[in-house]
Image 1 (cartoon, rainbow, N blue to C red):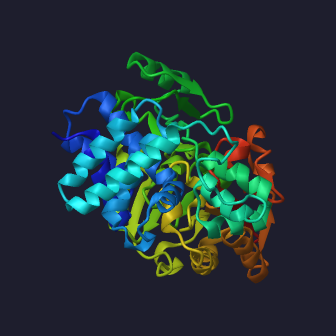
Image 2 (cartoon, rainbow, N blue to C red):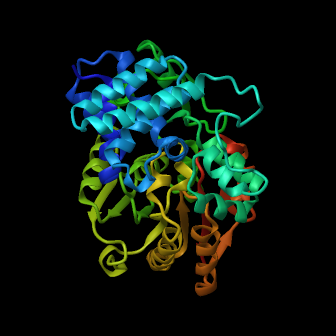
Length: 458
C-alpha cells in the first residue's frame, strides 16, 4: 500500500539526488496518486517541507545518535532517518512507535538486515530521549553546541542553517538580527495572491473564493493582494485561479513591479523573466496596453509564462528565448522601463523554498554577484533617455544587493539612483534601507527582497 510517508521518502530522496523544486514534485506525485485522502495529502506536504526546513538539525541529531561515522551513512538511509526523526521530534500528532515502525517497513524494501537494525536502534533511542523530560535543565537530553563558546555553531544547529550562512549573515547584520531572520525563515510562509485587477476587484476575488469554501482576507500592505487562510487544497484547482483572477505572489515580489512603475502604452523589458510572474504583473499595471518583452534562456519557463499570461487574459506580453547577455538593443529597440530580476542565491525566500539553503555554498554569492554586475550593466544599454531601470533579487546578502547596485552607479554616471521610498505606496515605505527597497521575513512578514531604481538622464 502506498502511504504518504512512502511518497514523502521518494520525493525527499529525489531532492537529495537531483535538487529540483519540491512543490513541483509534490504536485506531480499527488496527480499520479489522485486517490490519496486530503489528510494524507496534507501530511505528505508537511513531511517534505518540514524535513527540508529542519534538515540541518535532523542531521545533527543523527550524528549525535549514530555510532557509525556520518560519512558512512548512505544518502538513502540518512533520508529515511530524517523523515522519521522529523515526526518524532517535531510532530506531536504522530505516535513515536508509528514513525519508527513505518520507517523500518520502508527500509525493508531496499536495505539489508544490519542497516534495518541500525535504523531501528537509532530511532528508538531518539524516541526515548524525546519522551524523557529534561529535568536537569535545557539540553540535558542532547549535547547541544555551547552558545557561549560556539555561538555560530549553536545558532546553525538550533535554527537548522548552514554554518557558513549563519556566520556570513551574522557578520552583516549582527547575530541577534540574524537569529530573528532565521527564526522567521523557518516558519510557514503565508499564502499570498495577487489580484488580477483587470478581471476582478479584491472584494470580488475574496467572494469568489468564499463561494468555494476558502477564506481569504485583504493584505494589510497592498490593495491588490490577499492572504488565504490555511488553504487545504491546491489553489490552482480553484475556479478563481483558472479564471485568471489570482496569481500566487508574495507581497515583497509584487512591490518590485510597483517600484518599476510602468505606465499604460510603454515598452517594458523583463530581462530575466523566469516563469513570467512579474511580467504578468507589469502588464496588469499597464492595463494591458503597450508591450512587455519577457526574456529568458530557459524555454520551458517561457512556455509556462505564456500559459500564465493567457490564463490572466494578458495580450501584450511577448517572450523571447535568449541569453540576457547575448540580447542586443539593435535587435529589440530601446525601452521605457527595464526590470532585471537577477539570478541570485534566493536566500530571502527560504520560507517558501526551504531546500534552497542546502543547495547553496559559501562561494555562490560571489560567483552570482559577478553575473549580476554584468547583467545589470548590460540591462542599462536598453534604456531610453528618461527611462527607468530596476534591479531586484530575492536574497539578503549584501554582496548580491548593495554591492551590485553601487557597482552600476560607479560605471554609469548618466543613471541617477532614485530613493525607493518615493516610488512606493505609503504602506510600504518602512521597507527601505537608505535609497533601496529591502524586505525581511522577521520585520515585514514578507519574503526577503532587495531592489534599486535608477532613471537615465536625457
